[in-house]
Length: 147
Image 1 (cartoon, rainbow, N blue to C red):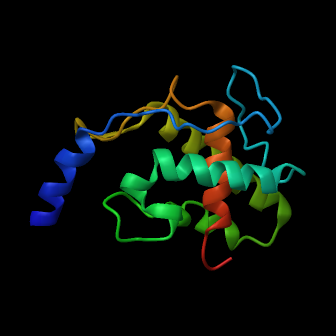
Image 2: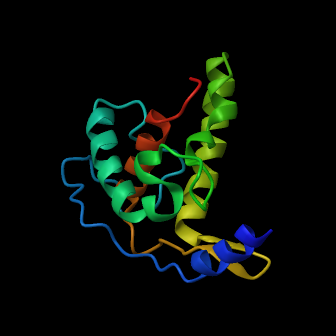
């Protein structure tokens, strides 16, 4: 109980600061957010993972753990975000699951996370480009356990 009380004020004070990462080698996505991660199954996926790792470690690691490799961080272990989708064998159902996961990821990144009036994650809309956000997600998925 004491840990939960001490973690919340730290998260509530968190401010979104743009990472110093160049996404120029990724295909540009434009101003309108896409409904699904365009880098997941592209030839650019390996480049997206590398860029996503760098952006994640600058923007997300303080709360979610370095290199998305720990569940001891104060914020959720992001490697579990697509755990349900990984277990689906049917390609059509898996794609629908990933689309739902992408929508959740994009909404949370853009709007942040406020629970009962407490900001647990700041909004990244206008701070983090769509290219970097999707690259971060591809990186997180590359770090997932139990594939």
